[in-house]
Image (cartoon, helix red, strand yellow):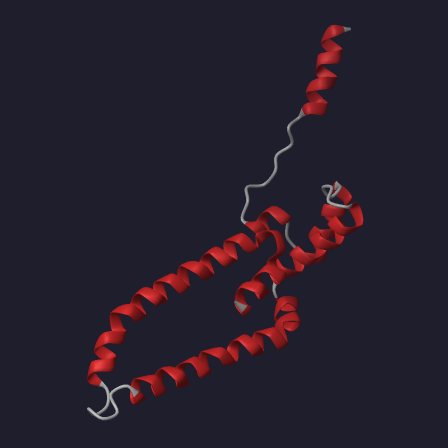
Length: 146
C-alpha cells in the first residue's frame, strides 16, 4: 500500500495509470506465487522442518523487497527532481494551484517549455497541437462578406 500512496502523491492526475500497472504486477506475482508455493513447501527442508525453511526464505525475501520502499520514500524528492516528467507535473500543479484548476495560458505553457526543453505534448507522448486556424478563417470570412 505504501507504493500506491507514493504513486498517487507523486503522479497526481496521472496516478491511475501508475496504480493500474502496480495492480497488474501485484496480481501477476500473486498468480506465480500460487503456482510455486505448493512445490516449494513440499520440497524444501526435512520432514521435521518442512514448514520452517520455506517460511524463513519467504520472510527474508519480504524483508529484502521492503527495503526499497523506504529508500524510495526517503529519497523520493531527489528522484523526482531528476525526472523530467515529474518536474512537469510539479510545474503543472503550481499553475493549477495559482489558477484554481483552469487551463494554463499559452505564455505559461511557453514558460514550461523553456524550463524543461521540450513541449508538454512531447513529454507526455501526445501528438503536437495544430492551430485550428479559427482566427484566420474568421478574418477571411469577414473579407468575403464585405
